[in-house]
Image (tube, rainbow, N blue to C red; front, side, top):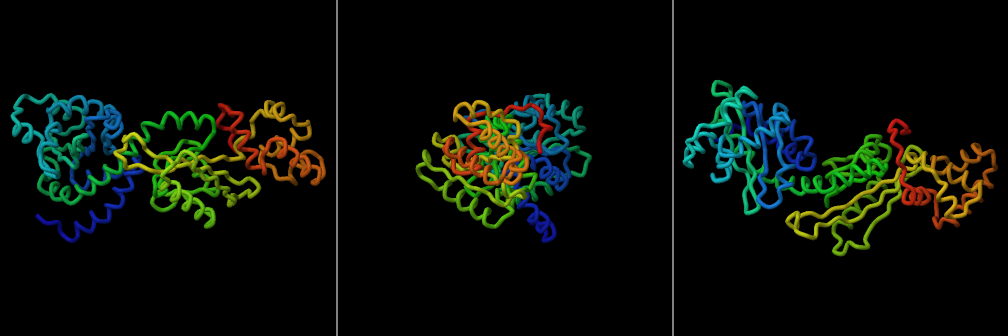
Length: 391
């Protein structure tokens, strides 16, 4: 059966949206809702069954909005034990869409199903079908749907659509694998850095955002210099800053030796230009084969001077032997004040502030106010639990 020109156009327009879900897994629910509606089924689930690293399976299960987290747990415990055909789909030819019971019976499993009674009770569906979209020695990816016999779902029509979309799902899931492993590996680490008010993101070699912590998301949401561009790429509002980021990511992701490679970018396109962002970019490369040798990218860290208003600088003052006036100037810099604002705040002349600030730079070994903020963040971890103090 061939797909009509009208049907082909609708499916073709959706393909780019499927690829977006490869690097933004939160989009899977919406994309699978669309696919379930297109197929006329109720539930649509994609799962990777990993033979080598169980953590990929744990983080590689996606469902549409009708599949609850509890439903996932039940599905995994009941559906992957040969009771709905899921265990057998990967034994079929790639993209061969099959009815669950027919597959079970084909492979000699005629035992009463424990899965279907649960499925009907939990979702109102009484049938399952699916296909394998990828398989190799490491594991396999399966796509399954649940539906009612008396519903709008038509097996032949669904098979026609899925034969067209199947190769795209294969590629999307292939791209998805390193994303899931990265999220699994770095999520706890990023959560800690978020509590420390350090914005961190992982980018792939194209500059596309793979995972970010809450602090980095806050900065992106403010659209103050840093933004998300086309294709989920990290970029900037200012063309010069955008070019800096793009060139640095391209350079670092291609580095052969990554131990001493990094780029430090000053983004001057903020609303308050006296408080520019400091963006650190360092190459990130898999070395142990965990990503099949496929992943190379960049670790991005951003410092927001406006954010560190509550740092206790007493340790730094003692360490660098700052005077009382130098300490006051230092504190004002950490609050994001310009030289003129510092002079007004402290009741001193602009030249005095400039002189005191130069003395602070000399004692701390930095060359400007942005490096001073960075030094403070590196030496003193701000742990204010009140997230409502953001400016």
